[in-house]
Length: 306
Image 1 (tube, rainbow, N blue to C red):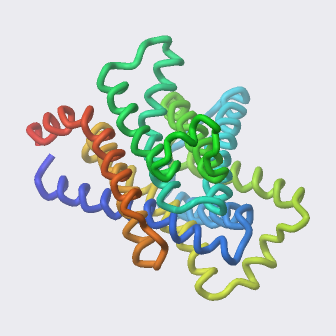
Image 2 (image 1 turned 120 degrees about the vertical axis):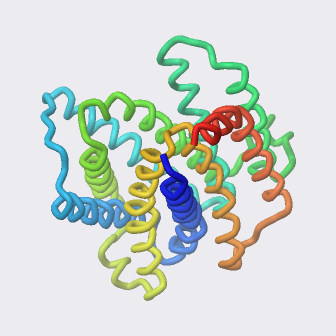
């Protein structure tokens, strides 16, 4: 791997995490004009259309799945992609964007723990250490520094919903490791977007006060732009940039960049005029420290190899 390709991959990963991080405050602002289900429905629909066009223009690897495999792919996609976005954007109606980004930052650790449970093995000492530090940072923020609220479970409802969405995404990430051996990544992602759009579309039909088309058409130009941004940049572009970074640097090194998501969420929230407290900044520093510590040896080895 040469220096120029490494630099390019690093830049693209930083852009990717900016897209993902900025979706938190932008999504929260968009919820002022559209219902959470409407926002998620259009995110999936826009992303599915973009991915379908990408496959038509660029082509895709051929693959063949059994009926059982197709059922598993659709089920995992509906639970993971649909559960994440439902919990995330519904939760953002009741909590701060910064809180949401911090909770989602726990996903890599939760994925590792799910893998340990599935393989019936104990987590390593660095994983336990990282989880304890990161959880303390998240709890500091979502309890506003009053950890005694944990005794009465008086935690913001939005934080609980986003945490549930994060668990669904961690489950999806773990299951995707095996699914990727049967199915190319881009078509698999398209199935995820279509499954999510279908699930959320059915929920919209079952919710009388939600009208996705009418709400989008009656939104302001800014509101429409925010919805399109989340679908195109926060979903399709972010995912493709992430794939490039993983291919160039490897998944252990690329995973380090996920820690920039809450940082960009806070910066975007600040630029948009949303409140950012000193406690949230401290929480972000603690979460990032907890996530980075066990990965520093891997990053050092990868840097030396380059």
